[in-house]
Image (cartoon, rainbow, N blue to C red; front, side, top):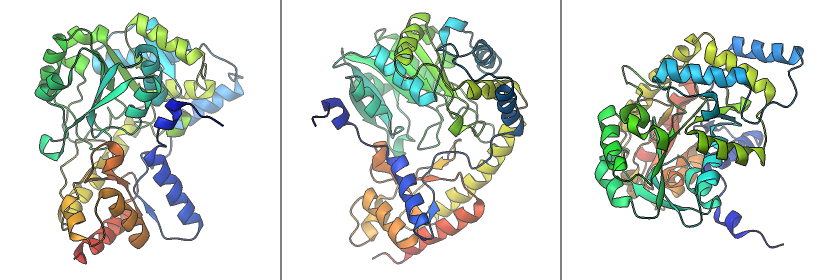
Length: 395
């Protein structure tokens, strides 16, 4: 069998691979603490589940419009207006099977063969592969720990070429947990205003998972003149503990959203009808569930940050949000005999301590590891203790 060239360029998702391996080892009886999975460890709020049950009992189990039911699109419009001061019409909204599908729709609708897409690294693992599946060329711009993992205006300007078609931004970030401040986005916006051929995707899926008094701002808020060139991607998975419900949404110009809808029409068609009705309840209902989760994540973050920075050879920046920390482990790698990179370190930790992590190279920045603290404090305490034991016995 001859497989397509494009599919042979694409790697399986490293985060899903770690999750699958952790489950396999647990099933074999190993004592595994999984810090690799990127989903809330909370149950979906009761009022959201009740809305789904009600939809089932009322027979709302049939096909819906490809781009989402009217009630959900209106809830999304209301959310953007209420929380982000952004105004969109119904034909500027597309509801998809998760934020991932919205981004995939965008790359398929926008990119031609050879178009370049600027992706700051570290990045969410799927960005480059989605670009390649659309025939585009990922242009990876490293922004390391000394850059606070954020793209500067200078690095953006240097990366833009006549072939640049799209910039992908994610704030707060998976895997780093850092978020862009308004003035940083304004500086990026000034560069982009000089390059009108470049579109922008802002992935805001962790918008609500922010700590302390951190302000959520995306590039459309910072530079309103970019509105017609921006696609804002979001969803219900992280804020409402609804990862398995698979509902994301995108907002953008009418022409681009129409093109993205065509891609979706010929792939999955509409998202689950039941999940859509549940998502209306999530967006329009009581929001206290978000604050409950954030309070827990923030406590865990403070613990992981302090523990990581006390481990020999590990250096960790504070996260502004999400449920991830992204420590630099280059010095730890140097200290451990037989380990030469972050992938080998992650393998050693899994084998010797039973702690499952994702190496930073999976996110485009070697010499780091991603720690997900979407798990209990007891698990985190034990996991960080195990990691410290490896570092303390290093040569």
